[in-house]
Image (cartoon, rainbow, N blue to C red; front, top):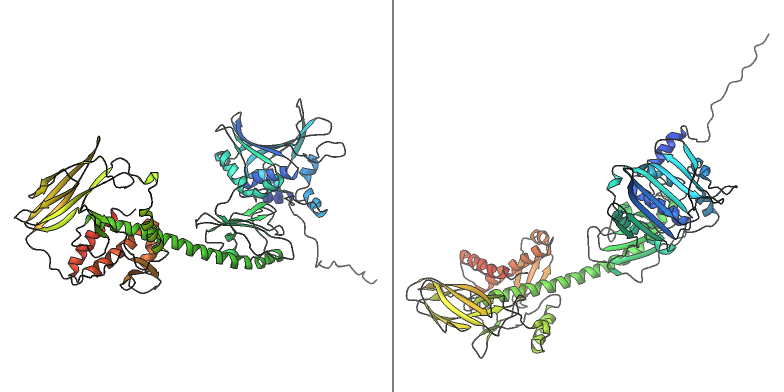
Length: 604
């Protein structure tokens, strides 16, 4: 008898994916949200999607357990055929959100489509209780616990049912207990900025630990709003831009949003946008791309699909336009900084030259003699200056001729100094010393003053020792003499000292005097990276050329104070080298130290 043929099963080459362990999949989904604040924002978004007009977030403690409660006045949980909140649907349709079907039917302004937002309570606390009223006037609640695959629904006894939904999580995880109401408020103000603005919802955060409450206001950006940007073109939808140009700050950036909800705090977190202008810290604002696809778990990641490619392409013209605006602002900031730096340095040098002996530091025509014999600062002609410094000097000359404003009048006496504070005088010779009294704002005080001069140490004689200006006569022997002046205005008394070096011979005069003296020079930049020179003096234009590509300048430019002092030292170097030709290196260094000592005192 022939053997019957046995039927052999062939291996299947295709099939349908399915979950091998449902609970393991749910656990992975529930723990995929890494930011607890993001979970709180999702609870608030659920309330906004339910049409809530008022949302309250309460952080408190009861029976020794910390809790977080979110309540709203929205439409609540969808009801079943009996008018009871359909908690069963919520608990058995993970990854099958009703919002997805609403979007498919044309509903707009709804966030969420994955049906996993409620599970993010695992990253906030141990248990979740959701309460909602039914059509029968009774209140029902659903209870879930972290790590427990079951849920329970029960009636809750309340005298009057509340409209909307109440969500309560307790006890909170140890790290969440440190969340303050203020921190929640700041996060929601940025995370849900446009959702709050467009929906008109009011969100109140009550922190019962600190006994404070906060109203969540949509975040306001600083800087200047950029107008007339190109419209981003995309076949998938519109891209909304709101960009503000501000001074560079490391923490500033443009946020990436989808339909009013923030996806990324900084657009530069995406590799394609790790370039100017997005990563320079000079922009604030939002880029809202409603057609982007997000990673379901965290909703902080972007899927690199066709929609993302369309977004990157549409942003190219925007980047070009903003880069041009940033460059314009950078140039304007450099001009402003150059003007301010030049004014500060020139003021410091004028103060220093007023203190130092005029016969040794008379290189610039910045002093003039008044009819009373006093030395006064002369505005001077600064030559060719960068960044509009010439206009500033002309404005200061005009301001001297106008009537003083109230705040420009001198206040009470605050300090006094002697001009010059240090000088060298041959034996037997005389020179004039002057007391300069100033108020707290460094305005010169001229009224109701009395002076008392005396020689504190050494030899020498003073004439008119009770006047503002005295004449000092050097003794017949070399030495050091300290002269003191005490200025008095009413009950206020200030004093200052000057050091006079009496010598029998002076340093030989090797400088060539010029009949055409110039004012204090200006400065300009020339970028020469790799070259060793730091600065050069252009005598024809009376301007100091600074190499802003030198490594020392790059190092000093990190802070304004360091940059200001670096430029002042370059000024001192160039001025000493130009005005003391023929001096030995040691003498030049001595002069430079002396000039810097009196200059940096006034460098603020």
